[in-house]
Image (cartoon, rainbow, N blue to C red; front, top):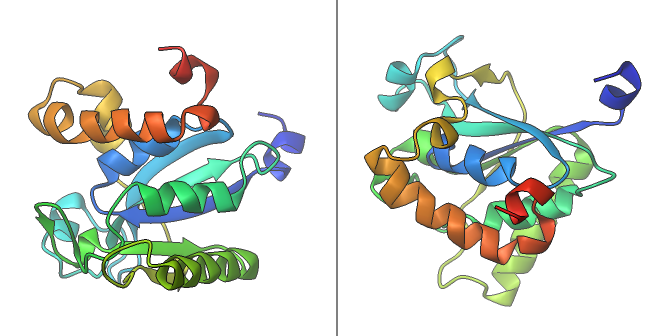
Length: 189
């Protein structure tokens, strides 16, 4: 990547529960350069997966997305966020329970904050969900990259039980909903 290209890229950070699912979904979108699994929003510097799983560090499992705003907008990333998990579920997604699995948007600038707050308010007003959205909207802090074995977990472990029975159906559904926004190589697979 050239310096010129990197100057035109932006970051977005989302927590939708398990970061393995979130990373797999965002990686498939055209305009997303990369998605890195990690931890944000807690008090302990350099937390480990084991520490975050205790729920005592304050971190959320999340994904830091690097994207090209000329190809995909922050609003489209927010749409993917709200449609890829249950934003009405406080501190849990499915069987994953604890503050580390909370629904959260870590905004990187005032525009992202405003867009996230507007999207949340509009979805609540429209009654898009049966219950109010509990998604936390917080300023981005230090993002700690998760251990190497968590990166591209679904791509590297498609036959692992959780991947096959939880992530794969979620990815299939996501790709049907966002088929017009997928990377060409994903859309044709």
